Amino acid sequence: IVEAPCINTSKNKTIVIGKTIYLGFGFLRDLESNTIKKILVEREKNGIFKSLDNFIDRVFISIDQISILIKINAFRFT
Image (tube, rainbow, N blue to C red; front, side, top):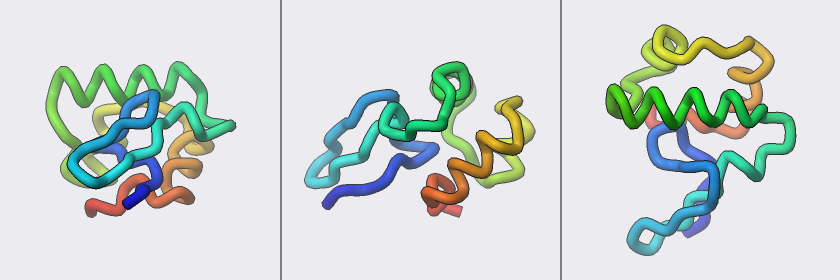
């Protein structure tokens, strides 16, 4: 199974967990490297994100960057 990037699972590069391939955030052309770093650092430091609101409270990025993540369904766990 190939999945689009997921806020709670993906990393910068593609990873495989079991039989699922999670594409990396690096495949998102317009997602800034600084945004990727903020997501990964915050997730490692304080655990997975519980909701979109939780993400917005914890990761300070522009609305344009959040829109990219919403469009690719990176918050599908909510």
